[in-house]
Amino acid sequence: MEETGVIEPLTDTDEDMTDAGEEGTSDYAASEDGTVFGSLTSSVNGHVWEYGRRYHAFRYGRYPLPNDEEEYKREALRHMLVKELLGGKLYLAPIGDNPHKIMDLGTGFGDWAIEVGEAFPSAKVTGVDLSPIQPVWIPPNVEFIVDDMEDEWMHDKDYDFVHLRFVTIVIQDVVGVFRKALQNLKPGGWIEVQDLVPHVSSNDNTVPPDHPVNKFYSVLGGVLRDKYGFNIKVAEHLPGLLESLGYVNVQRKVFHMPLGEWARDAHLRLLGGYLREVLVDFVGAMAVRPLVEAGLDKDEIDDLARGVGAAVVNRRIHGYLPMHFVWAQKPPA
View 1 (spheres, rainbow, N blue to C red):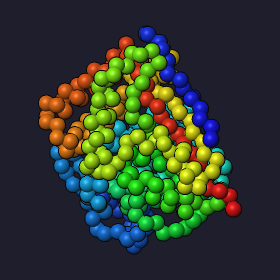
View 2: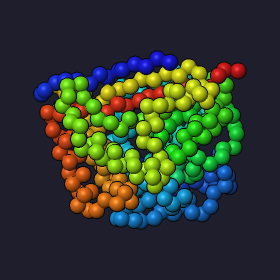
View 3: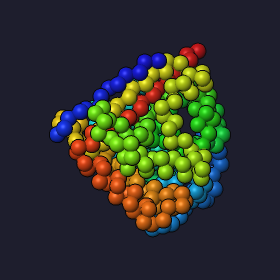
View 4: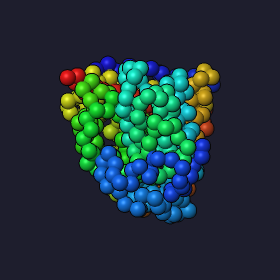
């Protein structure tokens, strides 16, 4: 396994989002009779409004983040961030020029699946999510299915590529999901996982031990573990996990992304600005439900959010977050 630091931390001082039930595509209609995972009920087309935000109704409470327009803006910016980080690429795995079947687990609003479908018009691209929040008008080779990736899969065993981005922290049975992915990849097929390791560091000791973002992650990690059964630090352990399940050719690249616009380099400043906005909006989204469930009152949540907001605009703090890209292959036949 090769591990490469691609962007090292610096020491500078200086579409349409539609409500469920709209007609016009084959995405949800085609999935009603049965999906790659199992049978669906009419609840997939519903939403729940809570704390002033909108959430998925199917498997209500399984996923702690909203699925409304405000969340779409955050996900769209996050998608732009990763593309900018990769120089326009959507993945790093060597899947070749002619994949036939691609699955995007936890597809969210579907941007990645749609763009991959446009890049490979002869491939069938399936996005899976708990929420029916993807666009109505999509490429003909793309479909979206409302289901839980942790359910049992119908074993097609012929996927060329399985992709997960910013999903590992909301999986309860991580081993089970990656085992099922391995079972459903064709021999020689690839999986790729893209996720942040939630801990801010620096090369010059400008990140204090009580950095507000790390305090936020500590509180969040506790409530997601206790209330939902999630582990927010899964990403850093993925190479060993994948190898233990039987994947081969496991590779990892780690991008140390500046948090905030403190870097002198223009490209890194752009990445840092994107990441700052994504993180601030993420804190806001998590403050609506999980931090309340953690027992924090409004003043405590407001103080935590203000601390994060102040820290990420302080250019004297040269913090970065590690973005891990891990890809691996099912053994060829």
